[in-house]
Length: 232
Image (cartoon, rainbow, N blue to C red; front, side, top):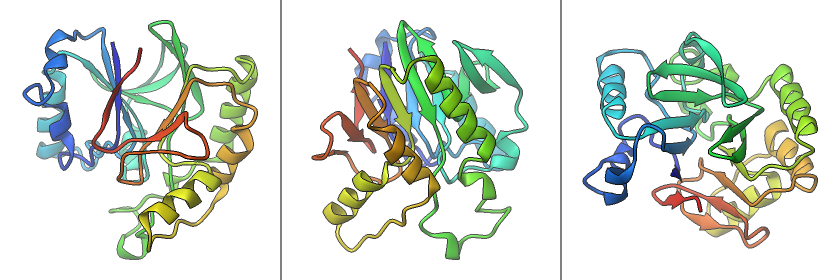
């Protein structure tokens, strides 16, 4: 079983992973997965609160997978051990919490997943570099190169795409729906726009925009926030 949901922002929106709220969790084992579409936020300062909630997640019957969003402590995140897992690179945060790294293709339960974390913070002016904002929130040249190389290997064909932010045109659509919101295009949103026509996929999921929404531009593109999707 593989479930996908939006950001959890540390413990702020973690309640959707509580067994009491979703009886399906009782049917899961550590061989089943919940994928979080960025802004995991529980590798923030490695303090007592981080460790308590990570232990809470480890106690759940499922394995937690996440891509990074923009609100992560990247300096700390990239200190965790890196390893190969199901065909791609991960950071192992704990026994059953894994960070799916950028530009990777994973084979999980016979389904392929292309992952690419990162996004541009909309509230940069209110954040401090190295304390609440990290320069690695957008991918590096190496990560873009790895993404393209891995897509070449799989012939630009995957089952599922898991990103944190959206291609530029869909991001503009979200801004119109939300009203009074503007999102600046950047190298990452443009990168997604460039690869989307080449990609063959069943569904594309992202977080970041704090709403549940299916794109009218691409009905296979879904933004997740509080909603939990169970893959067939």
